[in-house]
Image (cartoon, rainbow, N blue to C red):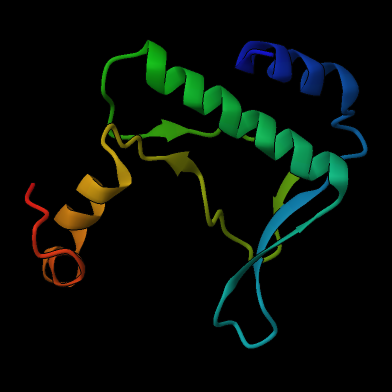
Amino acid sequence: MTIESVIAFLEETNDPAVAYFSYTTDEAGESGAISANKEGLRLYALELLKKSLEIERIPAQSSLAFCPREWMVSETGYNLINCVRPQYHSRETILSVIEPARYRSRDPKFEL
């Protein structure tokens, strides 16, 4: 099964008219949370799969914006996640750049 066939399946089997997906925060406002029904989760997964294909097909970009969707709402009053920032390296490489001291302390032999 290819990603394209999974995308096609999700597009055919999930109705945006009944989907609900929202970003919110927990009761204390300290952590992000998703509030969604199964159709909303599946359609959001569909959007992420499409972005993964875009990363493969287009030249490096700073971000890939999500198009507004009727089923995607924000309980916070603002859009918490509106794009994907593509990363083209392994997790190890990315973490070593973001947190070099912390990452190197876990594996002193690792060099970028």
